[in-house]
Image (tube, rainbow, N blue to C red; front, side, top):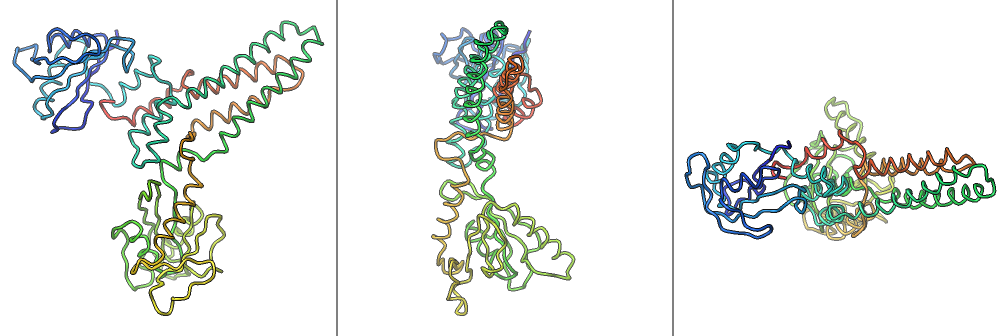
Length: 427
């Protein structure tokens, strides 16, 4: 028999209200032992909670029940909305733990049961995990699209088309001796498979979800004392990097996550690029050069002609408040961290460059795992050609298997363990 799990599903106490929920075959029995007769499904009722061991009163709470399979997990669920004091919550959790067949849930176990019971698929679970971790509006919107089943519906459509193609291939195999019939089937199957592969390829060409989750990497680089750290500090709005008049102050890479206009960025301050006999500074310079290579957007604060070759370079003429730096070179944006000159325009240019590297608003983006499976499906579909119907049918089966791994129909235990480990205890 499956254990019945329970956990605090709201924020850590103290709070005005705490939500404790249980899911599994003993949820209703446990609820009746603690709260008395349960209300009808999906109706809230005020109940007195008592410890079934001693009869001691725990709290007065709203109690709801949800009957399987029409519940979040696909199992019987009882939810307790009680006062959010630590002592109240602990007493309720202790009372639940004392009942037979009840145990504390593992992180992500409620969602994992929803997946196991077919309430959500793997892409929706991944979207939910991203939604819980979202810190910007862009991240929230993209995660919500996935969590609400946007990719699931798309995969179901792709898979239905594949199933139809497979059925046609298998039927053609049964009439393999009729060359007139099978010749037409082979051509039609190959064309349909190529069309689907092309559609999938357009999804692989989209920006990845990782850019949205981790932030666009904006690397600030240039020679020593060019104003890199001052610029990072003013963009972030706090003193994250040490600023002095001494050349070579920044020796290591400083990464600062920030959201500007709802767009997630990772600002990276680097050591000044120059030849140095100082062993520590030389290490910092080498790391700075590595960061330039990794940059999505490069803010170059040196001479324009010395800028590294990079497709996302923005030439910045920093310290423009100084008399000797009033005239910015052509193509460079004059900026001052002291007076604020040019900062608005610089921020707008950074955001414009970043948006071009992020999924468009309202557009779903594949993560690395999903893109890998879509790529596997494309590879299989590209093999569905030629005159051998058996090989065509096998290629179509391989493409279906990739879609099954994408949605979680096929065994992906290592993926599930990693995914649900990201969830909190009550989720």
